[in-house]
Length: 285
Image (cartoon, rainbow, N blue to C red; front, side, top):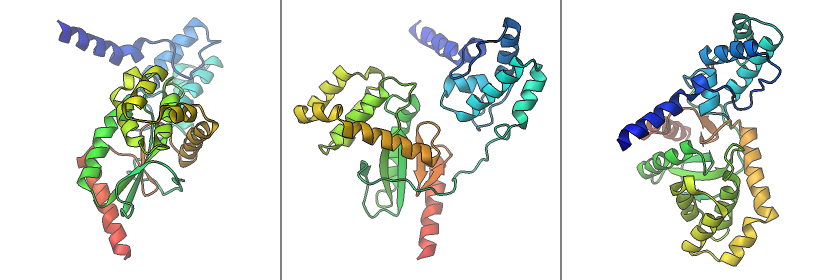
């Protein structure tokens, strides 16, 4: 019965986007009941162009940080608000710059990403550098940990990982968790804190973070001072701004030698990309 109950709960979550009447960052105020129904119907039936394979409303529920579904939603809602039919509102969205499906490139063009002082793991002379922008409260980020660890294990001499903070506003415990990770980094224990935060993603709180910091042997007087310091706050903001400049739209986002990777993080999917980069690097020598 417990299994059946859990399955039912998962189904309800999956179907929520089909019935929810309020979507993240979509202003439906000012619409009459008829126009709101018209707009929501369009959003539930129009494909998001970000490449996620979801409808716009579904994407807003499951990935509220997607700039494509947010922009498309607002175009459709504004059109309906001005009196457009559903078909005309959708046509307006399709004609916009967001209406064209996102180009399916595995690697985007390289961009500069400042990494000085950021937590890192892997050999300093690794031929390939991964930069990950992540959020400790993000359910997708916790799933990425095992996949990235598998990649590092598969390429122990060739790949180095640099971790950058990108706490999302939709996750209330993400900012303090990012600060805690950097405070632990000041004492040389970033990765221990990284692991314990992700392992307890659903239990993040200041009280628990302090307990975990003590558990991994941090100097608690220093940790408490660093946790709320201006220096740590500025470091988290700087990482987030670096992500924004690099084109980060959600978490986790991984860059391979400065090139945003748009594919799956599973080892079988990313291995050909890493091998291709290694061949490209070798050919330059």
